[in-house]
Image 1 (cartoon, helix red, strand yellow):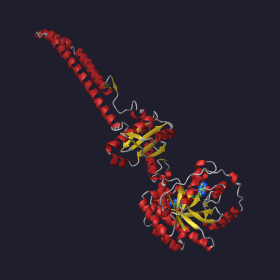
Image 2 (cartoon, protein in one colour; image 1 turned 90 degrees about the horizontal axis):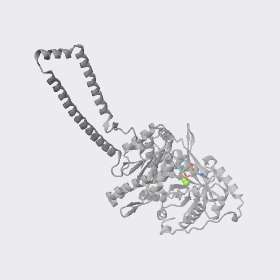
Image 3 (cartoon, rainbow, N blue to C red; image 1 turned 120 degrees about the vertical axis):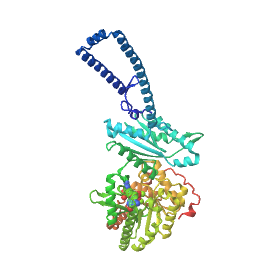
Image 4 (cartoon, rainbow, N blue to C red; image 1 turned 180 degrees about the vertical axis):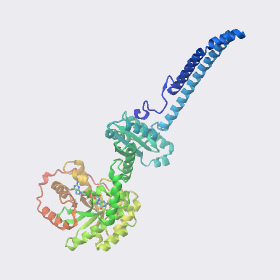
Length: 559
Ligand code: C2E
Ligand code: MG
Ligand code: MG
């Protein structure tokens, strides 16, 4: 590992030396010598001025004192002083060198983690500050912070020696791929920090790719998951850069995405987010949120059977904000429960309004992962249904598959109670989470919503086609209905219809619209779809058939 930023050059904190003698000591000796020479000249000049030599000779002649003996005594004492002085000088030089070696050793220990040999946190921060002062382009710097998921479990199950060996193996792997100007540190426990000057994005990708390979530890090849956070730019200072990388690392861990790049939207401590949080709290309290609805259309006959309620926030200064600007913030700050209650009440009131106008539509409300662990949720939903006078099967709750996976026991209890109420449940963004088919088959849900990233690739990507088609088959095999999200073209609509997908939702049919216009928009969609010419079947390339995996017990526990 090159550590030019770590060790620095002239700025390593130790006193500068020449020939092993600290410059400070050399200066002191020269100053003392100068004083001695100066005093000698002064004394000699004073002696000459007061005619001391002549007086001494006169005194010697008058008293008979042996002047040659006196001169000899002075010369001998001078010589002895020089000999002892030189010896003391050599001693001082040796002492200074030993002192310096000790200082270097201490500095080495403070700068390097004894287990992995990587830099310590102190050295890492010092390197970052040197880089900050160096006057380079502040945008060309990134910090990548990473830690090993479930590292405590490695220690607990395989022992602390294996844990330590794993840390060393990770450090070695980092060193192998680190660009020459970068600095790597172990900043504590299983947390590693990388300072990446130059082309930080490429370097981060390279390091993360290298860390995905298994680590040889003793006889084992350990495969570990990492959570990594990347933040760019030194404009706000080194401490802020490190803090942002840490926020991104927490996001990666929370969302189980492996890696996340810092974004202010997920940063509750970002000054902008703090202000936004205050505004959101007020908006939720005062009901200043809007609910728009996006129709879901039956592919078999073009009927609009339901809508998805999507929250919008008309912010007094920032304009109409979409959920991606504030849902994460609400989730992190405990506002998600009152926000969901508000959306639920509005959605149910809207459904009642449409029914009173002669349009019965199922309304779907998104429920965040966090709320699936809230044992009071089913009671609140029951109260809302009762007060808004809406039948339970006119309400659908959309949950993501990953949501149901954290603390599955509790999520399963909440989902089970909601199901008992008679509310419909669907798995949102299906295909993007990490749920296993076995887990999925145990969820008490009615519908799979295929994520729009797959639907978007229907016309161009064979893999996306295969995924959508086999999800339709899988859903049906499990007794579930299947909704395709994000339908943006007529070709996608026809293809989904040909595969027997149940419902479609997307901009090609309608964007999310305010409740008041839903009946008119629904009627317009139905007219448009009824007038559609089915394209020649040959226009659609058949997707390769992917066998539907068998899920034991699926039929029993579902539907
Ligand atoms: P989602 O539940 O998957 O909702 C569908 C999102 O896809 C909506 O974005 C919708 O506007 C967008 N969309 C629909 N059709 C198309 C299309 O054809 N093309 C493209 N590119 N996009 C399409 P929106 O409204 O921005 O919502 C984003 C996400 O925010 C939602 O994803 C949902 O997870 C979350 N969300 C929205 N409202 C709520 C809410 O009340 N509570 C909670 N917890 N989450 C909400
Ligand atoms: Mg949804
Ligand atoms: Mg979705």
